[in-house]
Image (cartoon, rainbow, N blue to C red; front, side, top):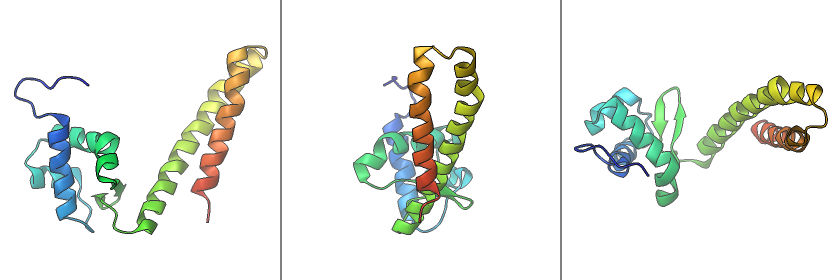
Length: 138
């Protein structure tokens, strides 16, 4: 983990401040601007705090952060979480499908015996299909 600059707040500290602000505002979305006001951190620090929380804090507190048009949330309902997860999976599936169709398929056409592409291409296609299936599920 990179060392914080002298005088800079560590990621876990700004992440905890973001978590506390979201906890106090449970049920209401907070934009980055509102998080800046609530935490008195800079926009950069709020971004670092959100990133730390998504990578580390959500596992510690077993409370993921979701985002919608109203801002960032700590979801209070499982349906809110499922909607967010499906939306994120749809985004990842689309990006992966574009990577496959725009990079790996042409690679396989140019070099059909290249072991790297013959191994990876079916795996990526399978992952994209599973993500897409979950994203469009019941």
